[in-house]
Length: 169
Image 1 (cartoon, helix red, strand yellow):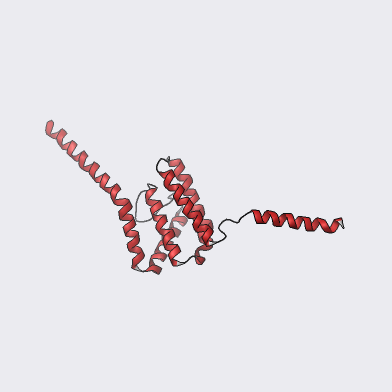
Image 2 (tube, rainbow, N blue to C red; image 1 turned 90 degrees about the vertical axis):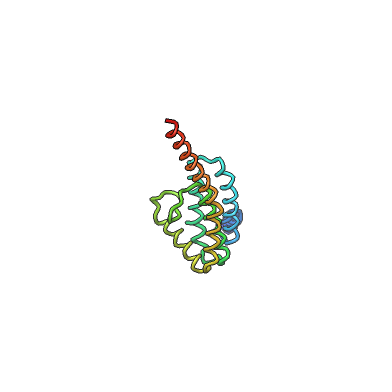
């Protein structure tokens, strides 16, 4: 009798622990909720974060892409993918990364990851038509233009100060 109870007890314990451990990114809803929480936390952190703290956040982002997004990509609707990449672009711009022709998250040496992001964005734009491209352009203009205006104002002020220094000598 004891020999029969042991396997049943082990099975029950295994099932109990299995029920307690929730697999990460087991559904699109869970993934999107986790991503929304990540974005919310990143917005709070980025306002006063050091470069090291930003890199930790980027690693979390990369992990979400590599583990969850790739796993669930085909289960996401086009709208969900659009929302995900829109928030990703906002995260990228608010994270203070340099703007270039390509989005670069994390190390510039992580070419495979950056190429994957670029390809996914291009695919969502292609699947969406021009509407999503316009949304991204609006996001970039809304998030990037105020920063560029500050830079241009700083350059203009520097030019005026240099001109005054030259005129006074």
